[in-house]
Length: 109
Image (cartoon, rainbow, N blue to C red; front, side, top):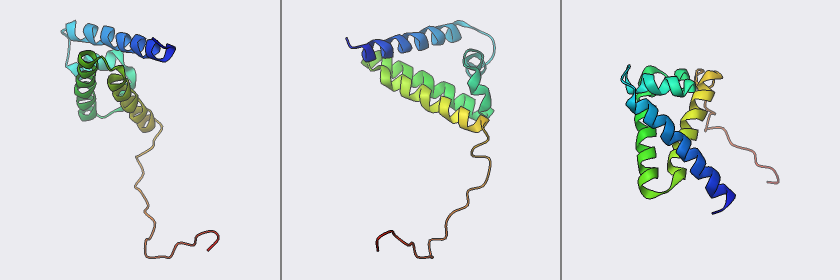
């Protein structure tokens, strides 16, 4: 096993340990329990926390059953980066699109 594979396996086992702890806790909703273990989830809206919790569980189950740690790790990273961007204020401003009717000048043409 390569170091990269070993690291991915270790991270997956950390996720498994956290999910087992969350699943055996009987206080609050799944999203609330997961937010206690992953505080970055608090940057998400309540609806997004619910979606995140479900998607993380699904990805973890798929990873465990297929022995492919990247599925859970990619899902975790994606949600973490989304929460980080929201916490930084990204996405709260309306997008200003470029006017596609104006010609685009290309270098060297």
